[in-house]
Length: 222
Length: 222
Image (spheres, chains in turn red, orange):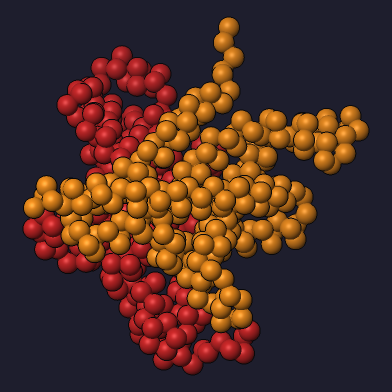
């Protein structure tokens, strides 16, 4: 099989793949940061005692979690123009990715916050700390450590999910493979090269996560 | 105009239901296949044979590190190049099976590894053979930590099945994509698609929450 594998074409097309690789990384990074913000807001809404905030936040999270990302992307891609908004594909895609991953972020952050035992918060209250001090000095320092690994896991999911943007013709890694398939009819070269580059990002994030978890265990042991 | 389009969409509901049936068929078949593959791979991954663990971790990493869309394209475009003709439907089922198998393998192997080794030793010293150890000692205890994420994985599988619409399988997403060409109301059409997925996934997500609450070991209270 390898004798049919044309490495020359891959070298010829490497600027395309480099562009796709960079834009996949860039799209994922932007959506990661934005979805972190959305997630913090949604999580705050969900944990709030007022129903005015908690009901919409819960509805948002449940809706996103029980519909597929592709349907959400198409919803915005076909839906925004019919409402009269002309948004370029890239921005539509980032919007869909952000809203999708924001719901999962909210759940991750909530799990992290709730991993801090109530006894600690009670201790904080009894030593006279107010809400923000409890959040700043007791909950967050402990919650952030355990939140980082699932957060990196979500980053991996985001990198992979960004491949769906190729279906609304955003230029990224999978799109580069599609272009190679269309221009030269070489799907093997195109998609295997794409897959290899996705694996690079995957192992990068995975080893970061492993490193952090080791550090976490070490810190707890000390 | 909205009234007209709404009427058109109501007329095309049977088409969507056909798509829903296809989504259920694809998901159900690959769910069964994925569970079987994931079970055996998971048992292998939790075993003490080093070469087997290495081999299976290559499989798991390769699948988890690349987007499902790319895996599907590789199957759909490259198998014919190597002389294996495959229709869209079996290709979709095959792709989803291989993909979900890797995730389910992780669930099974971590569930099995969560059972303390002492249990295994006790089983060995009672004279149970390998199959009996697994069947009567390890799995019944592992099921507690396996079942909730397994059902969660089924939800992800159903959502991932929307991606197979791009290779021409007529599922709900494909039905929406075809309808939106005729009725340019993205919000309505993909809202309907979202509702159909929601009907399937939302009860399952609640089942996961219920199982999680049910299966966590109750702390011993005095």
